[in-house]
Length: 359
Image (cartoon, rainbow, N blue to C red):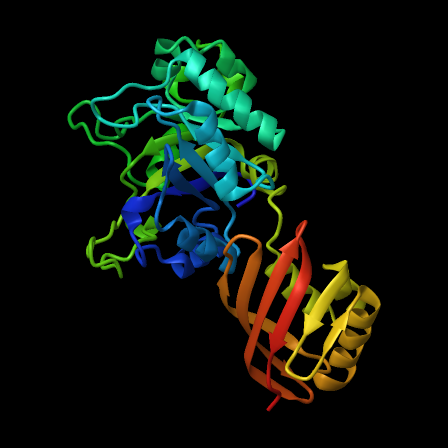
């Protein structure tokens, strides 16, 4: 598994609510079928209505993910850049900008418009975003020289070598594509001067077979039929080089950190997740400050749930709050109804309400 390219799936609003099977994606990632997910956040000022559900699904199932935004040249470019950051915050490892026509009869942003968007975005996030586009579009808008500043995710669909020229059939499976093109860059990028910038190749928008991550029937009454395919992508670099570059800097969600700290049975690790003046509340009492919180967790580990094993069972992540459910098994009994809420400040827990019963 370590000697191959990283494989990824691009999902967007066409999956619809309830249409993405994140449990299946997690199982595939754990089995080494593919490695990551990229999620469309929106077009212009319009956020994808199921984006939060998709991000929550990735976080809950520990799926490496990143996001991309599609700027519309007919709208204020700087405002769109600020919208992107408002929606995802400043802590992502990778920000991706989709550079193409936003609608069938429209146009891509010109160089000045795109430069305005990117300058505003970079000033907010203090990192260079990744550009998703094609060499043809970057050339047509006069941005090919500017593109040398950025890592590139290039779309270039090829016909299958094994069938060509008798049949024109696009690749739809990783295995077939990797067999013919492992480690290559898209042909359109060769001789462009951008060869060293390309990190991802989107080779199909019709993924097939075991790479499905969509349920056919969704929970959205407007779109009862979901997708059963997905855009498929492959890294240019080996998986062990690509994944740290793209995803290792993504902050682990605070609830994941919290459950990991609980399973360490170390009150110092748990207390380190709180602000100095944090408040911790349960049905019987309220305490404040790290020292009191650390003392409470010492009692929690020693008396309430000794040798406990803790598992998150549900999760939502609206803005600077987290609500999650959990279960535990311990030498003193089980918790089946754990339900907690965090209020966050500067990525630490400022307020924590917890409810659980040991049976």
